[in-house]
Length: 165
Image (spheres, rainbow, N blue to C red):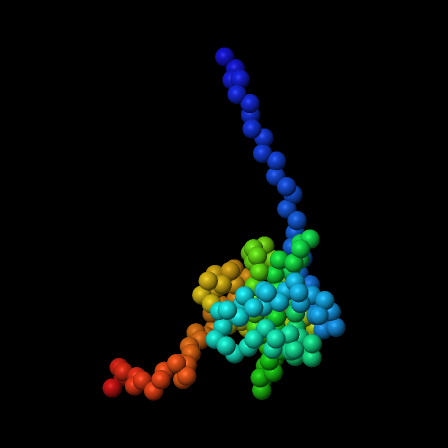
């Protein structure tokens, strides 16, 4: 006997791809209301080296550069700077934050790579929290260093127990 139950049909909305693009310094003020909170979100994982207003000033004077991820809405942002070592030039990712990073990380990587080739950079570096490591490894990054921080202001003169004696 044929089933009288209605077959449910699930309609899925077509996925709108995320587009990542670099933002010229003179356009930063127009974008800031949409990306400033992403910069602040990323800085919540930092240790007070920068504030969002510091990054904003650096973006305006072109010592840092902004990349914006957009669908019909802004879904993320990244900031970068160029680091000139004595023997190498690198692009350092300073902040990255947004919604659904896995949806736009490849496009961000492509945009940064295009820029890196244009300025003849040798590497892209990023100091990130552990949660981002697997996502960056999927893009071809490898762990080069482990960052450690000793905050002198927080030590309050406490003697450190050494185990190497």
